[in-house]
Image 1: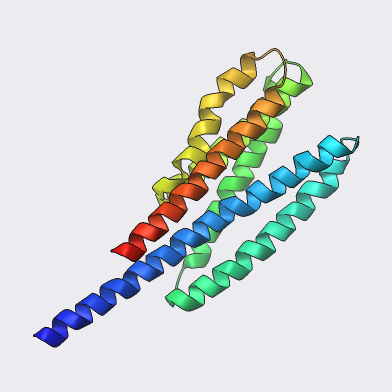
Image 2 (image 1 turned 180 degrees about the vertical axis):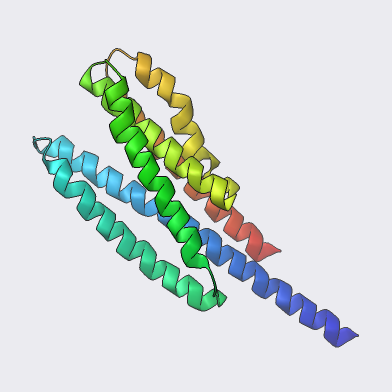
Length: 194
């Protein structure tokens, strides 16, 4: 009977560590985008670059982020021994992000008749809140709530602001992603302590 209890304790610790590894993977996803977004605004603050810079920066940033998170995911899959239909969830998440791009960067700007700064701010907040909210709907990871909730709350403020809607959007998203990263890390430590 004592051996069964010891085995149960060991298995619970292993489970806690696997849950923690998954939470750290979630935190790293949001942290990499914080770095990419921060680097973008630093570059834009130092250099007076034309809007075409976005056509190079964001696709390159996407590739870098996917390479980084992909390598972390492979390690997590190896560690956790995940098999099966994880590609289906990945395809569904990619579909949500494509829908978010279309909604945020096509529908919203076409629907608004506002100054460009306001349109960009509202488009950015819509894109992020819809896409991350869609991921939350698929995964039910509650740590994501600030990452889509804060941008969603800020949409009406960006819409009605007289200036700096893009700055509001950028810092609102950074706040949401930062809180999400902290929440994932907190959840990871709680899982380890179980």
